[in-house]
Length: 439
Image 1 (cartoon, helix red, strand yellow):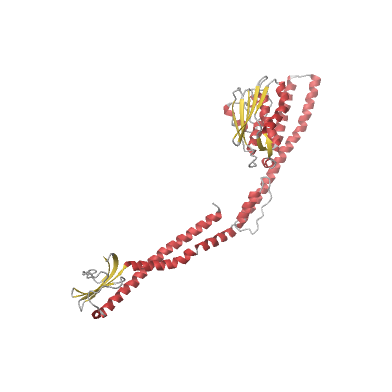
Image 2 (cartoon, helix red, strand yellow):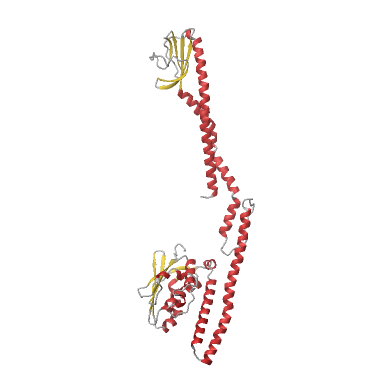
């Protein structure tokens, strides 16, 4: 629920609750006033009946049901003005004052007045329902205008809150439009005192994040580039020594170390280039099958050198992606499968589509990975077996970290398992591109 709707709901609920409480209090006050007014009216009628007693016929039926009157003289009924003239008994007890009685199928408020000198009792009663009706009418008359004004009050509250929250809405829209690499300061027109410190802190935070982002980007890129030059020089030096001195154990160890360092540098550069937001902006429709075929063709000299059997099964599979990152992903996975599969081993690649998902399965007959390391191999610089890796393949533990990084950008899933061929099984799930929906 938005803040605006929440505030409107809370304010209207509070107003309705207050009005309801006020209506109850008003009803009680109106009822009390009605009781006093009608009680005084009963007293007045009692005095008036005494003055006109001789002019009224005995046992006369009341033409109206608003009042009932009885006059008793010396314990004898001399006047009976009630809706039911057949009732000959006293309307109440011969006790002076007010009380409540029931007759003629309703409840009455009774006033008994005693004239001790003439030994007369006069009973005047009025239906209680008239008192409630008067109180209800008074309360309703007071509350009705407020109830009718509720829709206009809701609109006024909504409009006022909307104007008050305008700076916050503007801030929200600016933040939604911002790209991950957009660190420009926020500018809000008609800013409020409450929001100014927030915007000031956010702008300072953007500035710090931008500086940190640029430092990290430049450091990784510059460091990798700077390392390439001395590594190239070392490679040339080792090659010259090998030509002059021949192959030795020490030179081979140095050569492998240089190759490993070169591999780390290349992977760092690769990781630095796969910035999520830059990549997503350049997404386009790519046929996964053709992309896999292209990578297999690039790596086929290694397959042929190792006398391996590699196969690809599947049909066209369109996905949204970016050529460089997808090729990097496939080169890492298929390249690993080829490198870790021994001579005359097997590598199988399958592509299949189920509903809106496309699955890429890569299996090999290599040594595989221990199940306990399935999660850890995606960590940077972690390599199953560490420096004592049972294969002789050069690696630095960045390949699968890059793969996982790219999979996250594609919002896909990766699952490691044991292959029926005896090695590792890698299953990647992509979202299929739908031509009808355009996604």
